[in-house]
Image 1 (cartoon, rainbow, N blue to C red):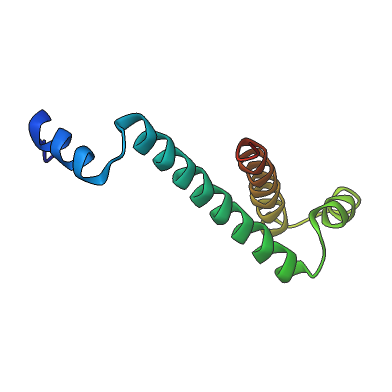
Image 2: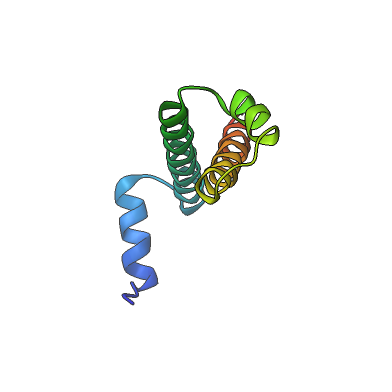
Length: 93
């Protein structure tokens, strides 16, 4: 792992005219947006794969004997949907 001295860090932050706190906040926002994007892509993948939204898929899934693949997709889709909602709510400010 590479460690920078405090003097180097202070010079970098000074040159960029940004505080360490502001940079940390910006990094947190970027990471949250990345998470939102990844889970949004997962949700979109399943919507295209099954040509329906999760609500309809869930309703149909609960009324039939599904295969292992169907159950696995249900769990993955449910997790992606909940995670997308979480990161979306977190980014509202």
